[in-house]
Amino acid sequence: MSGRKSNGGRGRHVSGSRAPVAALAGVPVAVGQVVECDIIGLTHDGEGVGRYEGYTLFVRGALPDERVRAEVSSIGKSFGRARTVKVLKVSSDRREAPCPIYDSCGGCQLQHFDYAAQLRWKRQHVISSLERIGKLKVSADDGDGDESSRTTEHSLVVVHPVIGMDKPWRYRNKAQVPIGSGEAGLIGGFYEQGSNDVVDMDACLIQQEENEALVRAVKSVARELGIPAYNRATGRGLLRHVVVRHAQATGQRMVVLVTNGLDIPYVDEWIGLIREQVPGLVSVCQNVNTAATPVVMGDVTRVLWGEEVIYDEIGDIRFAISPRSFFQVNPVQTERLYRAAVDYARLTGEETVIDAYCGIGTITLFLARYARRVYGVEIIPEAIEDARRNALLNDIRNAEFEVGAAEVVMPRWQSKGITPDVIVVDPPRKGCDPALIATMLELKPARIVYVSCDPSTLARDLRLLEDGGYRTVEVQPVDMFPHTGHVECVAWLVRD
Ligand code: SAH
Image (cartoon, rainbow, N blue to C red; front, top):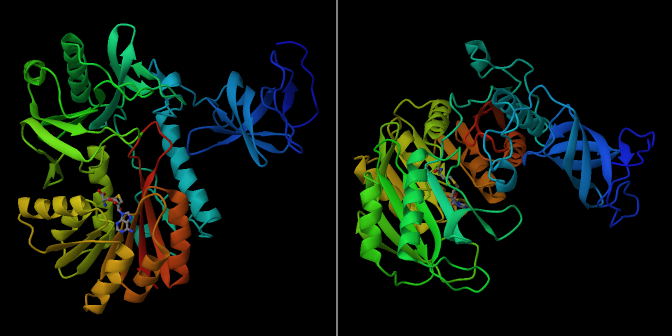
């Protein structure tokens, strides 16, 4: 580093070894410039929020309360991005990331942040979203298990500490591994950050070991048999992805070979050799995807050997999982999330409940045990097929499912005289459709349970529900994805 100069601002400009390559009027930094700044927060992508002369920089690899030297990688009118060159003041929550490929992979963002600090930060992120976007008043008390704070008389929203994992590693039950070519032949692992190049990987610390062993076996047998890897640039080659699933409750395992065409050479040898190496294997499937798309699976799926589904359990409910079924990836935390949802539904066995955005009916079937009747609605037809099959599998007869957009189906149910006591919603990141919020306000259920994977859209929707006569009593965040910036929440609302 040569010729530093202080500019008297909150941050400090350090003229870097590389000359700035781009500048923007009114923005105090240029691309390529090296600056020093204090980190005052963390984005949900795990970047440190830095301030340099009043300008916001999202700094990769930096943590709150640190001061870093960072190289600016891009700039925009209201914020820019930078990458940490050196940590000048180190946070006491900084840890050595245990994963050797943490920096190049990008699958996790917070391994360098102490786990307890991750949980504190996620709770704070939920609180500030509720306050800033939802204009809600959050209780200052930490809501830590005190029964008195659980009464509906409380006018402030209680945001509980995040339910974390005792062992926040090896939690994922599903892996989707892209295949490519390396010097020694077929490889598989992950796409290098910001590129289409596959980097070989045999160990991922958030993946269940059962999946890792299966992927290793599939790769080594493919190499042995000379199966060609798919090439994204030319569209040639055969093996595109290896998708593996492990049902934690039953130990069953499934592998899906995603191929660029129907024919697989030496397919019987391949299956035989994989089965030899992986005793718990129950299902080998093929999915054909010939399109030049980043989407992993195509439309055609067939069983090559064994069963067409594997079975897993959440709580006492059994689920059949087919190659394309959506199923939560962290089984331990999923059960905790659903328990919180059922708890907030306050069911006595007499209620009518609607589960909007029901997927394969996971929450619906959980609720069915405690309600008179449950209705699930979901937009993907295959998911509803799974939901119905899962109801039969568990001999649950008080659940009814319908395919369609929740905002369309629910008014139809309303006109048929279905009046829910409780509505549960679990929408995708973009939150609830405004028409669905309007329908909920018309249906006037006594309680609404909102399961959310995005605190900002949750906060936005809670504001709409509050303005429509509901009060948010409690929010329980659950850490479904340790070492990433994601946080899932269950919010409990009552009609005022
Ligand atoms: N509750 C389920 C799934 C939640 S994911 C579980 O925990 O497993 C959100 C689901 O909403 C997805 O399955 C998605 O297909 C569905 N979805 C998205 N938009 C929808 C809409 N407008 N109406 C109904 N379902 C929708």
